[in-house]
Image 1: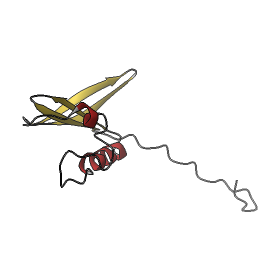
Image 2 (image 1 turned 135 degrees about the horizontal axis):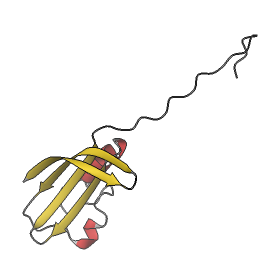
Image 3 (image 1 turned 45 degrees about the vertical axis):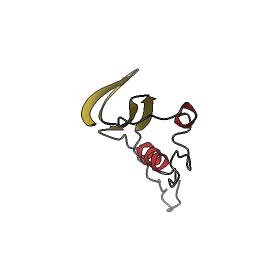
Length: 105
């Protein structure tokens, strides 16, 4: 089952809006030793798996200043991705100043 929500995130003095996507399954869940390492490359429970899926998801979500998590039980697993609606942009660099002779400062 998939759920997508627009949520308010309250992290101390910062409030932000984010999109949260949760995907649930009803499989056996992840063993604890795999769950701890779920976002590491090449970690897999499948004989023909590459173990790159969740590692790639984490990399992409991190680049968008979001968060990803996986929870597991004997009734299935839930993967949750949260991405801010607006990603804070770094402050623009101050333009270089030049003196009367044209030297850059």
